[in-house]
Amino acid sequence: MAVDLATMLGIYVYALYALSAYSFTYRDNSFFKFAEHSFLALAIGYNASVAYGYVRRTAIDPILTGRNMMFLVPVLVGVLFVFFFSKKYFWLYRFPIALITGSGMGLAMSGTISAQFMQQIIPTIQLPLYVVHPVLGFQPLDTLNNWLIIIMVLGTLAYFFFSIPPETALGKATSKLGLVGRWTMMIAFGSAFGNTVMTRMNLFIGVYKNLLRDYTSFLGFAALILIVATLERQRARKAEQKT
Amino acid sequence: MSFWKKLEAVDVRIIYLVLWIAIGIPLLVPIGLPLAISPDTVKYKEAIDALPAGSVIAFGMDVSPAGWGGELGPQARATATHVFRRPLKVVFLSFWETGAPLIETAWRDPFVAAAMKDKKYGVDYVNLGWIPGTETGMASFATDVWKVLEKGDYKGTKLADLPIMANIKTVNDFTMLICIETGTPGGPEYLRQWQARNPRLKVVVGSLGVSVPANMAYVASGQIVSILRGGRGAAEYQRLLNIATQADVQGSDAMTMSHVVVLLFLLVGNAGYFATRKKAGKT
Image 1 (tube, chains in turn green, cyan):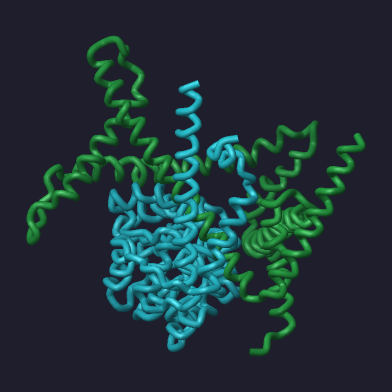
Image 2: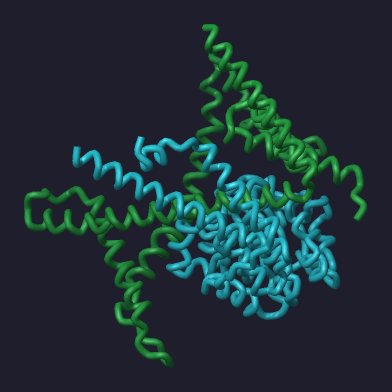
């Protein structure tokens, strides 16, 4: 299958950047630094251009054409961001920050109470402790699951409950329940860690599959980066020996 | 130096090399390891299958390119294939500026392209592109879609010229939200700003593996109907839809191999730790 020049160039650039980024696992080197810096520049450039385009279409154009002068207010508040770079007028920078933080917090809180507080508590309270399916009958695994949820939720809450003196009988009972909470959290952290590892591996596999689309670029760039990194390592060692 | 001490002092680059080799083998030579389908993936598919014909669904491509290759890309492509195979009205959008271009990337997948062959842009589906403002943008979109999109769709076509948008004014006009998410804003933010306003909105999430434990609380409470768990969820879904290519099968083989290698390292590392600790205790 014939591959056009643009596609080939894309594959080579991809291979060079992917291998440059992964070369850090061997050691820090010029290729890695180049990939890191150009990625940052690209990401900032992309975000800035997209944001500029949106602000121009949404706010600047309506102001300039007189369609909606109300946009002057947020645009002027937004301009105050530049005072971040002024020692004298830094206080002006606080207005847009306060506006964003305040509106963001208010907006998040209103939904949080419903979606992340009530909607979590109500189903937990409603969990049946003896699960019976209308056709299949008693469900031991679902029942066990519900019991575990209840015990682990209570345990985790008890772990963070500090208002009872630990020397009292109630305090000792709370501490014991808190131990269940500690184990619960450890299991949750382990699960989170396992999932993190899986994600990193999957992202690596995605890159690896793309690299294998063209062996010449993969092997060629890998060899080039390895040689450069090794030479740089030798040079760094010699410099260290001299000093 | 004892064997365990040597193992503890092994150069980390050896571990990386072992991973490159272990993952590379199934990518070069297909093994065809078995892959069990989890109940979550089945439920995810069933939720889309159960939608009545003509339902209007939102497809949030809230992703960054970093998570696209191994996990979210396959999830998005499989989900897009599925929704286009069904008689649904699909509104694509993104609250991540990096997600908007990836909507059309997903459409270029051969399976998605085949499924959308008879669908008409603006009638059966639309790409609204990037909507800025993260969670604030979500809230604004939920209350007044047309006001937020005065600029038009991704290419600048006015909403009035898109028949699919005629009856979509607020979040109440959507039956389901499919959210393919990298992070924040993602599933939890949609629940706060969309589902809190429209409690009938069914939400399914395709998530990076790293976000799965956090999202499972919402699955357990029923707020999220079901979830695709990272790359594995994507592989399961592809097999359920019968769209897994040879490369996809090789990818899931590589995934299994990588997990086996990590598990082996964990076992050996722990064995070494306990062996050296026992020895230190004796001396």
